[in-house]
Image 1: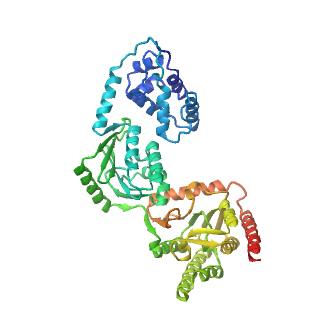
Image 2: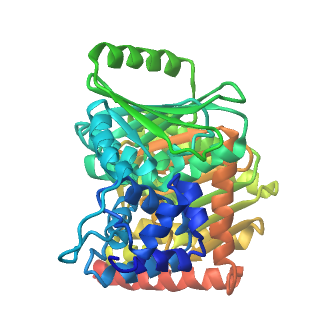
Image 3: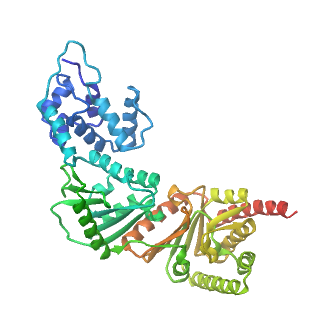
Length: 507
């Protein structure tokens, strides 16, 4: 006897799992599971069994309480505690449940045919470019995505939106991190089945990348039932990964990594042909298309339909004509340019007020933290398109004060205009503005990058998800003291702070 495997026993008890549950999920013989727990057989940390047991246990760590408990256990072995990834959790878990960290003297190691052959098979699989299981596949894909040069892109094709790999936390977490670290982008073509719940799950998982434009999604309709689900990751001129899952999902996925040049070239060509016939979920404009971006804003504000806005800034749409023209005159010396911009803003302003007068509901969410930052810095950075120009625009403190006065004016004049001021906005809304036109369209102006971009879509699944997201934020902020008088009092307090600072500046 080598002593009980108390760690494996403890996690099974904590997660309320039996030996049979573990055996069925991993395919390991129940008698071998019992021997691991009793200590009569060592669970080696480099074995296939340890990998499969850890992978299964992670799928059952489905609450914060369970995750925190595992982290507490890891700390007893001085394992890394600052783990932020599924892969890091798995490495710790494999080490923690294994029993070959310390081998007692005089006790011969008992061999396992499966363990020995598994090691050989694993080496053989790697030589052939084959990986089995979500975490080994994600680990291999992580290396391939990180090999993509900065500024370049990779391609993903999914045979069905029912694919579980694209939304699996291990895969999505890896992709979030790589896109942020490497500054690369990904084009994703999805064959949609008509199951909107599955497509919505993809949207929820990658909403941040959609907003920033680092992932561009395209769809087309395909078959309603597949023999298998597949995801293709294509790294141009280098490698292709083919991940295959069963529709049921009980079996572990299998990934094949191919570097044969002709295969990679031809699968890239096939992807391009499919891409040409797909429909973009988002139309993305940079500010070279400022006219198109302005027309998108006009459609959001100036045609019938309930409008919901989340803005990590202040909104020039509420400036009086005189205040807006003051800003334009300071920035435009050319009389003709000044004249057409004044006319354009009047077109916006008149049409927007007409919509409000006719009862169009309009709700907007802004950040108190951002308002205080504007007071402290004496300016506000926003996309130039709000002043009919390209690039970024720094609005002075007087202009910001005029916008807040406009908010107060609209709140007093239009009962169908509502404003919510949150202490701060969720991270997803940093340096961008969302417009959701109910059941019609969604437009997102993002100014995180070198130039502002506008993402616009009439895709029903996208609109549905962004509407749900807005409602969740709105509901969170309307629990207390969210009436109009309270909102106006906040704005007037900020305006007084701005006036005090302007008086000091004007002395």
